[in-house]
Image 1 (cartoon, helix red, strand yellow):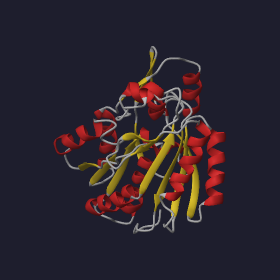
Image 2 (tube, rainbow, N blue to C red):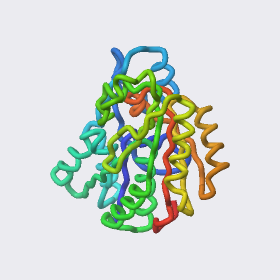
Image 3 (cartoon, helix red, strand yellow):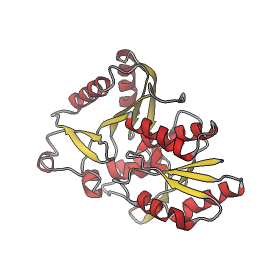
Image 4 (tube, rainbow, N blue to C red):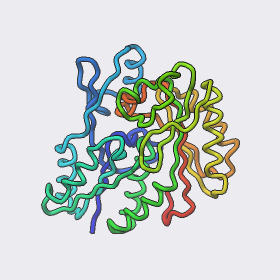
Length: 290
């Protein structure tokens, strides 16, 4: 058995601080009169500069079937028996579920599998990265699914956005009751729940207090863990991310490492510029080092 790993560009793996060989499927970003391919036609820095200079809220299109087909066929020619794809949460985009339903019908001579990451951004990327590590250690598909599910369940993410209009317009913020009328007055802390949905967690009056509270929540959520990976995420707010990373390094007794990850344009189209977030992954119960 030889297993290849793919993920979509929502995974932020192109900006990861670790080396990997995960193959990436591309998303189209529709910005005014242009269609741009994430990671090919536009970079993260270019995207956020353009976004901040415009009132236009861009949209995206999911990766096409031909995107995954070319990667699967490449793996097939290299003698792989299986490919596992790691898409953005099924509850944030239905394309992953659609691919899962088509998996058994679309390829001959190679097995195609889809794992519901129930998340996005670098949290999604870490699942694909861990799967690659497991595949290199000769885990079978069932073993990879079981072990990556442990990592998924050991992951928690909170974030604060500057402008909720992007999430509301795109339909990614699934619970907005009590928020719409007070968008200008509050900076809610959002989370990705266990079903892979973006939901409000707590309402905070100011941005600084929201950031401070987010840090406290992240540290509190894993205070009994021995080994934790912390990833500070940002959408064109690198200085703010650096400040948060310094605080975590000073306060977290269990940090195996603290990383900074920029949000890819595919996700940025739905959250706008200015996001700051923290993801933490408890690695205590994982069988393999990550």
